[in-house]
Image (spheres, rainbow, N blue to C red):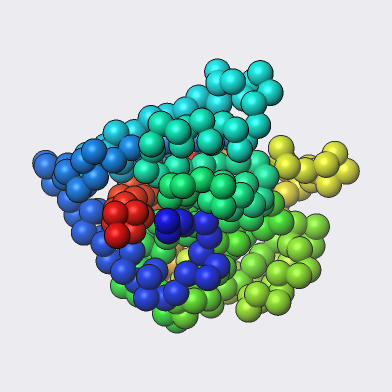
Length: 305
Ligand code: CP
């Protein structure tokens, strides 16, 4: 079986063809007839050990629009609560002859483990601080639609990079597709080894934002921080929150992105988040369904080959 466990290791040709196919589904999503029967008879299970609004709903919609049967497992009311392990849970689901398992887990590498143990395709819907591949693909599709290309774009990824699987997947994808990535944040939230990943690091937002095409804000992931590392929210917004004054340093036609969920007034000013001329946040969500349709279709084709 083929899997989608991360963007690292995925070729530019595969990224390109997933984005092209997702563009087709994006157009279909805006038409009155949103459904196809490409995955009729296939079963997709969403297994989320961490909370989600966007990813889980869009995988469900994506599967249903392709005609698959989609089951959302609620971990909170499952036998995981009685001590059943990750592998036993997944083996149990697999015994029901599922085709694709979509998994989100707090431990980096959990989807890789399942891919080794199970006889079905596995999609990583976010694992710990490691990768969130479909997020990077939907971000890329959104950028490509609005800027017409990825190559040569200057993209600033700002804030809590240390805890961000979204940042890691985006760095892999944008590097591979010829964009240039800058990381901006306090030293405590940018791991030093990340400088080896072909990115430029800035600790001063006013420096880092100069001349960028895309400003991608990240959520401050307080739930993954130890007490001593938690910054004061007011101070954080002052130095690293995106407001009009800081955004004015980017290119005049620079666009703002955020994977969600947002902390308004912490990493992003509410007026910028809601500015329909500058903010791509809603379009990112829309592209999430299209990208997940493309990924499900590609893996279902692989499974039948
Ligand atoms: N961006 C993202 O992964 O959002 P959810 O946590 O709501 O799925």
